[in-house]
Length: 289
Length: 162
Image 1 (cartoon, one colour):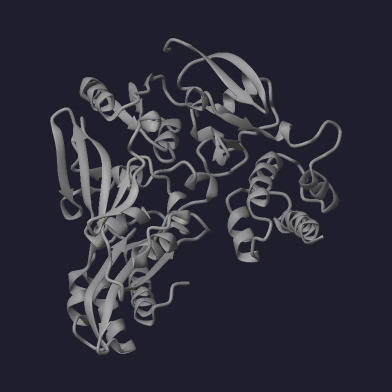
Image 2 (image 1 turned 180 degrees about the vertical axis):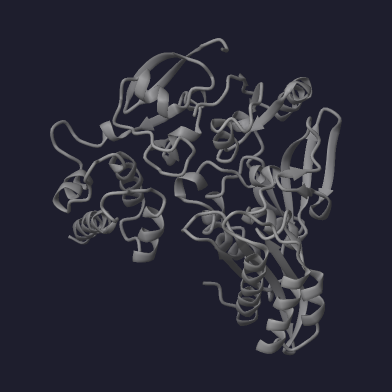
């Protein structure tokens, strides 16, 4: 199908963009960034915004750099930029490994990191990254700037705590320790398809014991989050295969699984346990497939 | 209806003045208004890849961009691949390796693969599989498409070495 009619706006500065958003948000105005999620749902007429505020011409929002121990990712940073960016450290390697799981090259060359977070699809890899690594969102509006921790940002399936007149100008992710190790595993039925369950695990090994552990789960529940029940079992322990399996099973028991026609709750729990166990194992070994 | 906008598109080094609604996709505009029907439209929501073209040096799904967003940048479509009557090597390879049957997906595969080969003909097999998994073909079973792209990649590498 074709998208319903809308009025098109193309601001060239952040000030202009937030002014347009303040004016049109009450009348069903929306931000258009990469368009790789918004345009399909407009084609299906699931979304019919009356105004589109296209930020692709806005200057100064394609920052991708580390400042004071934090990686800043601006609103126009495309998925593909994470393939070639060289800001260094474990976080660079992690983001590049995760990026490879996002859709396909022509989608990655348009879609944006911040747009994925604002869209908040439960199957979004970047939403899982933000939730697991404790990212901070920088929302801008004519009322000023607001910082939102990832834990307070995701509100449900395709729902965030961004106000209608705010746009997600930047995401900030704390850099990881030089000896941090990570694992990322995703299950889907076709290359590039939506994740049915995925897990991102980051940890350090301190004398053979697990330290600074983060176990994130995405695609399985309405929102991505860290699974405290699994982390508690593993933290400070030697990561034996038996203990990893216990942690994975604890996570599977802890979740409220999304269900759809192809994936019932039992299957989603099994996928959750498998992805978490494999991601922990990869993180412990320091290998990423 | 919303008011139509007069925009200029630069497709295969030719300018096209078109009058379009903002909601018109780049794919529809290239076909209907520029008259370049080589770009095919399959799913219209970014899944099938038939409409893949090159915009500003990057491969994109032209069904997921509005034409109004593509002003002032270079657009390359399948019509720009051949040099007069001489087919692009990838087009020739698709013929030789029987990489098309109905041909509906072919323009998308050609644009996707020709761009990737220009950027890196030394793709690994895994990278090539990942690249081509982007687009759908319901006739060939993909093996012949892979053969065609591998053949061109090998030729390009041989020429580089020579």
